[in-house]
Image (cartoon, rainbow, N blue to C red; front, side):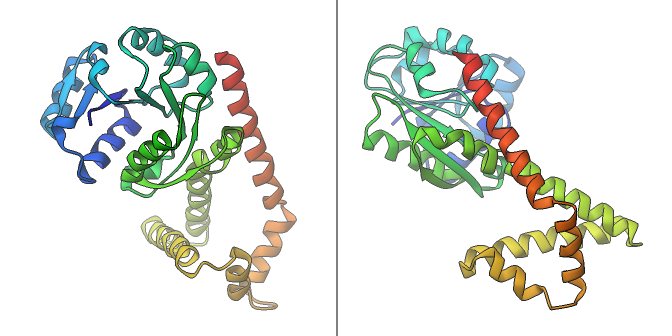
Length: 267
């Protein structure tokens, strides 16, 4: 099964390397990259076939579109003459609906929309996938198998993808923001920056592992750390007084609304 990857930026390269690590044979991968220098870099690093145009996607069973939302219309216009019914197109562009993609492609091309996130770079990604009009269970299973090369996958109705974008798509940035704030607090409390960084990063990694492996509700885990009248209780009181919980809800609503705007702007 030939898999073509159109767009080899950070996420595109993460998918490429993940597919290779997951056992996809190099000859089964076709990378489309116009820039000669970048093409040479990818060939040398991964040993895959890199072509400057998109005409060869006609021989691919699956085409992965890993391009910016604002570039999608132009990319689809370029791709359309080379695609045919029976192929699967998997889009990782935020806010671009399956309906929009289908409008630009030949009838019968199956489309799956994916919302990934950047932990895919270390094979700990979280991706949600939704199928379009011509997509059946086999197409969704194929897309899920591809995305599992870089982490976990959920199949969801497309109407949920704006919320998914707000939670897991943008989510790493929120966590990095919190980590950044905790490190700065550590420095403010007198710790060397390197010490504060190591303490915070390992605390985040360990807490995430504890959540996953115990399967317990975060409230239960938080309460186990929060002794009555103790240091953690004093800190949580400040977070509640500053309405941090409400701020997260407002922030995610803003991200969801922006995802909707991107979708509306592409129509």
